[in-house]
Length: 292
Image (cartoon, rainbow, N blue to C red; front, top):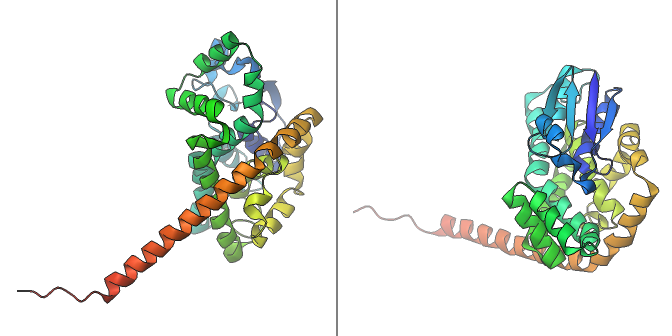
């Protein structure tokens, strides 16, 4: 009944697999090799016109976009529930899906590219490298990849991704202090599942501590998350030793640059916050205008 078009170390595929493991579901896996550009095969594009993974096919009907797939699975297979019953908590859960889709996805893509895949592309022939760039159908995605290829961690797209992670982990620390131990309460939800692959990639690259070492609630959440059986069987146990080795080898090469950018981001955030507070104070102290 369920077929997942999948690539092992894709963070979006990992999100869907964790959800399916949490539901106790079985599925048929069809590998789509991103390094061979199989996502642009005309037959696959008939299922997923965006040329991305994953794609879930349920009873002959394709569902695309990992966030939508996870919500679909929770609706189609409601036990155990992965969305809180309370509407306010459900809105907070969806806030994390939105944050992942609008910031962390591009951030982890550019960080991974600058750490590992950039070097791999440098070793390609010019013809193959240009073909890879041409195969990216979305001009915005092509610009991102080309910028990261040319400038590495100093690409503005990587810097934007680092800033997105900083905002996310700052908010996560505050949220866990309020509603922990999981993001929206006592049990894991789609909020936790959405974030897990993105924290895992930073961890396996040896970069996660740069963001969370001084955030004790996030540290405790990650220690709990990585031992959750659905995380281990849906993500951790499906990464090959060769993939782990590649991440461990290349991630530390960019650690110093990333740490410097995080410091800059925090300094700019602090300045913006103080300016905003000062401006609010000025407004409170300013006498009202006299009416003529």
